[in-house]
Image 1: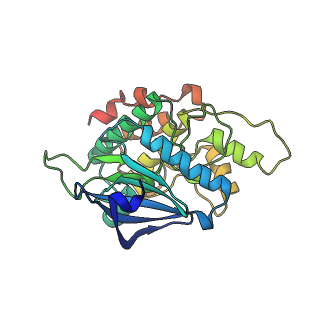
Image 2 (image 1 turned 90 degrees about the vertical axis):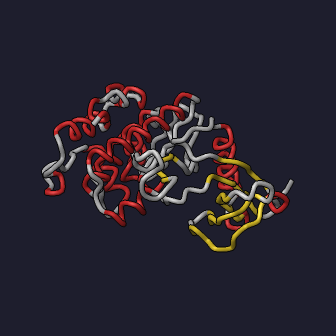
Length: 281
C-alpha cells in the first residue's frame, strides 16, 4: 500500500526542516487529521535514509500512551520516506512558551510530570530519546483540557531515538545534552577512538534543562558554538543568581539540581524523578 492509497495530503507546509517537511494529512477511511513527515530521498544520503527508517521503526514500535506522540504508518516509497503521526493542535512547547513567556511553577510541575511519565514508558521498552527539548514536546490541545487540567504534553520526534543502549554517539541539541554526551562532542575534535558510553539517564538531564527553561525562559547552558556549549554543560554551573530565578522556589531548584547531576549514576531515573515532592505541587 502506498501513502496516497490511504491518505490525502494538505500541501500547506506546517514545518520545513533541513531533512524533511511536515504536512497535515487526512485518513481517507476515518476522516481523521494527522501529520506526515516527508523525507525527500533526493536530498539525503544513504545513512540519513536509514536513520529516517529507524526513526519510523522506533515510533511504530512504541506503546500507545497519552504522553508519547503516536506514529500510525510508515511508507518507504521510491522518492520519499513518509511517517504519519498524531496531529498535535497545540503545537510545540517551544512555540507555546514563545507566545506566553515563562510558565508558572504549578503548571510547569504538572507538565513535567507528564513528560517524565512518557519518558518512563520509553525507557521501559529500551528506548532513549536523546533529544528532549521544548521543540520536541507537543501539546494535544490549546488552552485548558475538558477535565480542567493543563494541556497534556507528549514527547515526539524520534529522529535521534535509539535502542542501542549504551551509546557513544554525540547526537541531539548541545544546549540540552547531558555532560556525558558533551564530553564525547569535545572528544570528536581529538584523535581518539576511546569514547565513553552513556545510557538513558541522558534524557533525565534534558528534562532538568527543560524545567529551567520553562520557569525562566533562559537556556542554562549556552554559547556561540557547540564546543563552547559543551564546555558550559560540563562545568554545570546553573545560573540561579540570574534575576529570572528570583521567584523560583527552593523545591524547584532542588529538583533541577537533582536531574542535572553531572554523575549519571547519582542522577535519578525518570521513574525515580516522578517521586520528587515538587511534582506534587
